[in-house]
Structures are given as C-alpha cells and as structure tokens.
Image (tube, rainbow, N blue to C red; front, side, top):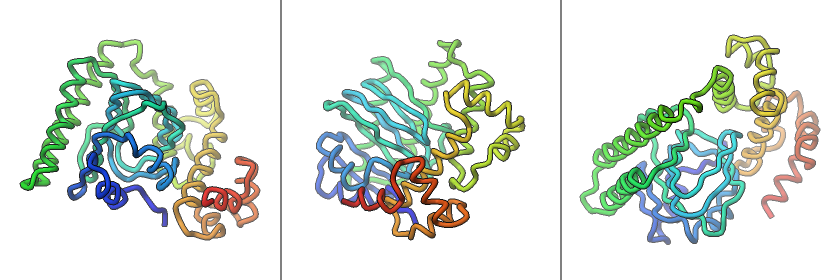
Length: 283
C-alpha cells in the first residue's frame, strides 16, 4: 500500500517546529523556511497527497507538477489543490516561502487545482484567514466546526476571486479543446496507471481516438500515449518510493503481463530498472 502524506505525517514536524499546528484533520504551516530541505529528504519530491491544500506564496517562486501538469507559483499567488493529487516538486528559489493549510473531508467548489493571482487587497484579506485559522487552532477552545466554517469561507472567497479573474480576462476563458485536455488529465488522475489505451480515454470523452490525439498533441506538445506512459511511470515511482510492495506486485497492479515486461517499460522510460530506481532513492 502506498504511504501517503497525510495529517499523521505532519504531526512529527509540528512537534519540533513552532510554525506548524495540527488539530484533528486540519493542519496549518505558517512558514516553510527551514522545512523545505527536511521535508524533501523525509517525504521525497514525488508524493500522492490525499489532503486538500491551500497554499499562499509569500516570497520567491516554485515549480511544481500537479497530476503531471506544470504549475509555477510566485509571490502573491494562491494555489488550491483538491484532495487526492500527485505532486512533484521540481524546484524552488532559495528565498521561496509560503504558508499552507491542509484539510480532509471538506466540501469545496474547486474540482481541479487552481492558481489565483491576488492583488494587494485580496492578498491581505486571504492572509487574514491564515491569521485567524492559526489563532483558532492554537487556542485551547478550538472546535472542529469553527475551523470548518472558517475554511469554507476561505475557499468560497478564493473561488469568487478566481471567477472574477476569469471574467475580467475573457481571452483566457477555456476553449473546447482546453476543456477536453482538462477532462483528459482528470481521467488520467483518477486512473491507476494500468489503462494505457487511447481508445478507452477517447470513449470516456465521447470523441474519436484521432480527435483526442490531435487535440492533446496541439495543446500539450505530447502524444496521448506519451502522457499515458508518463502517468504509468509516475504511479510506478510512487509505489517504488513509498511502498514495500515487490516489483512483481507493482507490475501486476499496473497491468503489465509480467515483471520483465514492466522492467523493460520502466527502463525504456527512465533509463533505470525499477530495482535500480528504488535502491538509488533509498540511498
């Protein structure tokens, strides 16, 4: 079973860092300065995270990939990531800092990850939610319902800002092709990496395989098969890094005919065998 970054993984950090607080299914990190390298060492740069997150960049910039989609955030950006997302940390500036709220089981208007660029007024207001959530979670009278209500208001406020951002920049309204690509990545995120059939995804989107292939190539510069293979590699890496499953079990879980077939596929895509990748990262 994959080891996931959840609240229980954050608690040890909270016990040694005054900038982190945890209450029930909620955690808040006021500053990740001093945590970036430590968290990268202990939980890795490739994670499956079941928690929902609200991240507000207060300094610098970072490059991420969310369900294989690139995302660059910088000072003044808020990033909302729903539950159950793969995240790869590709790099961040030396001065990068952010504050983060994590939660689970919360209804949210965001169906996929969303980055919102805040003006000064909005930034101060969203920052005040972080301030208030921190005060509440640190108080002895903290109640889960209070956190839920504050978090719900925060998500609603950010969602309203995102809608206004779209309405004031109509040229950025998603086209039909962009919607198909977004839905394709949603389907990819929901899959376990075992389905690598272009026709199956085209059927789910009610379009022909050729149409899907043309749109994906035009919008991403990659073929559907390249993305399906990349997703399978992503799933394999997470299992190799964060589980004790045997390579044979991982091969079976990802739908390969046998372990040698999986090994050939993984080496073709990464230049390493699954065993070499696992041993190298463990060192």
